[in-house]
Amino acid sequence: MKSRQIIDQTKGNQALAHHNTVFSQLLKLVPRHEFETLANQHHTGRRLRKMTRWSQFVAMALSQLSGRASLRDVVSNLSAQTAKLYHLGTALVTRSSLARVNEKQPYSLYEQLAGKLLTQCQGRAPRHGFRFKNKLYSLDASTIDLCLSVFPWAKFRTTKGAVKLHVGLDHDGLLPSFMTITAGKSHDITAARALQLSKGSIVVMDRGYNDYTWYNQLNSQGVFFVTRLRRNARYRVTERRHVIKSKGLTSDQTIRLTGTKASNCPITLRRIGFKDAATRIQYYFLTNNFDLAASTIAEIYKARWQIELFFKWIKQNLKIKSFLGTSRNAVMTQIWIAICVYLLLAYLKFASQIDKSFQQILRLLQLNLFDRRELRGLLVGEPSEPLKPQLQTRLQFS
Image (cartoon, rainbow, N blue to C red; front, side, top):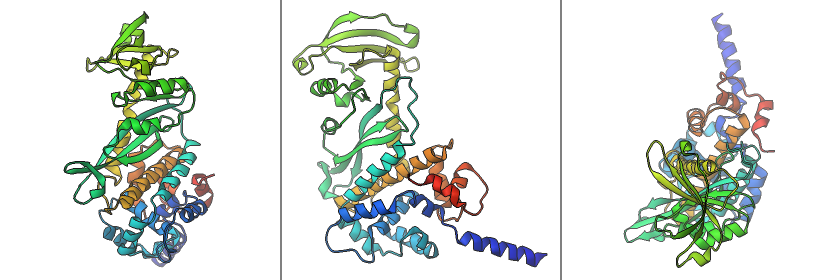
């Protein structure tokens, strides 16, 4: 009886040995042929032989998912999984080779890859929770601090370095639909002016994006904006509307801007007063949308908090605060691969239709990264069993 149990267990282990690891299944969500096409387009210098761009992506994605603190740590982790590297489509890499590729090969490969992953996610993302059908975006930027003595190219202040990540967060699935990385001293509005928003969409931002000329430009493009009115803003009230005070509303006015820069935005605007019941703080919102209810405008601005949570999440859970290289290209490579990993997590969440947070999905992956078990079963909480090929296809790009 005991010998039969040993034989059955051996057969089970042999069966599992033919199945891919959780990490391998995750990487299969990246269309390999498209990746190689991008790798050929974004290449400089001599042809890579032993160290490929795919090997770089595997290693750096591993550092994001496992929180490895150095290139040597990443390489050691891969070395400990030598028998499982075949299914990852890579081989052992050296620390020096990985460092050299991070420094020399263009980060633009991963910027383009993030765009392709974003497109796949958008096809499965759930809609935002508002009744209106307009696209809704939150716009903000976050500074990533760097040590100026280690990153001299990233000068921000006298003794401080930094880069700035600008994001337009699509509330359909909370996806970073617009992303750019600039010098830390770059003004937020500079990146905002380059955005191409579709007609009818709504963009919400804080007072850091105060620019009357840009407001007028958005209005002429048929784009709605919701922001906070500056305290020192000068305006003239032309109409007042009744408000429901039980919803926290204190005013709903039609205004025209006055003052020295008012000529940059010669359009009719809407000023809405709202008092938060919990904090008792009074807010004044500025918008060019006259169709939505005043309470909805207030809710839209409150939803802007999602982009703050996005920045907080990626800084706490992915490696974009400490870097494995010191050159600008190495830093940008690491940030863009972090965005790619976030989008892979988003795709897993949307495709598997599970009621788990990004945090829970990431923790599951971290604990089972090199286990040989079916990925979807792991996400939905099924007991560990041999991989079912027909289920794996549900998580692949169409």
